[in-house]
Length: 244
Length: 197
View 1 (tube, chains in turn blue, purple):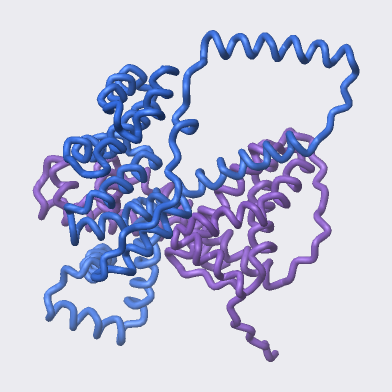
View 2 (cartoon, each protein chain N blue to C red):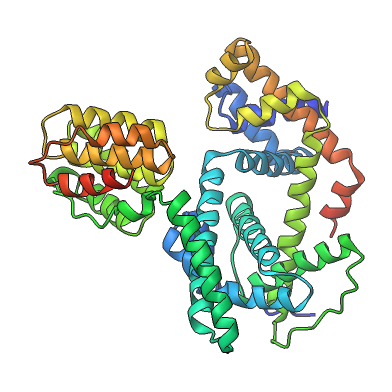
């Protein structure tokens, strides 16, 4: 009996009842207290499960992790610059030797450029089109506050209305890189770079950075070589190329 | 006895809202403002910064879950509420590990009854949630899969394709599995105990 009730509850919550069923269900909730209570209990369990496996919750957890790691960086740099260690001269000697060894190690083995050295998503001011001003403003604000997941959702809304807007496509691609969506970023940047918009060369450069971020150094190298020498992106690309 | 009801939502409700809205700026602010106290408390009580950070993350997720499923109206400052939940979680960790030889250094800040009450509710919520999820692993692989996938971002059609069953059967199965799970949860003594707290 209880079993049947639970099936009814799911049907009600998931809106799969016929009008007649719905009417009788709502009447029963009003008149049968035990049934109503049982429904409340079911709803509570249903909502917990619904939340537990939702993609929204997954995104939220990612944001918390991000906030945590950003906070870590800050607290580490504060503690290292804030504290003064009283060194004795012989200790300085040892420290200098260690530094030299570490320095040598880094230069000889890991002298590899990192994504964050070269990537600067910066702040954007979008060319606002009158028809969806709010979405443009929201996209801009989310991107500038580095909430790239939110920015992507706004970019998607804008792209639904005007899929050909390369500016939006380009910043969406950067947001995709920032949120580690490698494949999506790569294919979007590739399609931009194959067009002849003002973003074509920029897209090549960022496609290489995406490779760099995921340690695909050979691919990054090959892509960077596609940037022509008269492009504004050339100096940076060349600098990066020389480090790879 | 006459109880004076103070149902006013505290202005710090903005932090709860920020968690639900996944607002990165305010989540960072929560870390800036409220994490140091938790980290320092846990450090003083035989933990380290890494342990404190885990507790902070868990606490933020608990608050999010409660706000998302039951609605959470904060009637006390976020500071006290957040700190108390972290503290409770940390004391649980210590209790579980048992052998740390810990002396708990009590914090000297004043915490209102309202904050304590609010924390009780959150702890109760967390235990209920934990019970539901634990029961999920007791209803068989097929049911577990269909519920997990059925509530994910996949559509029911995608779930059906993924499991190699028809759409109609997937929906029916999800409903049957939910019913089975609900019965199992409601029959457990822990459910009754938590409900009557």
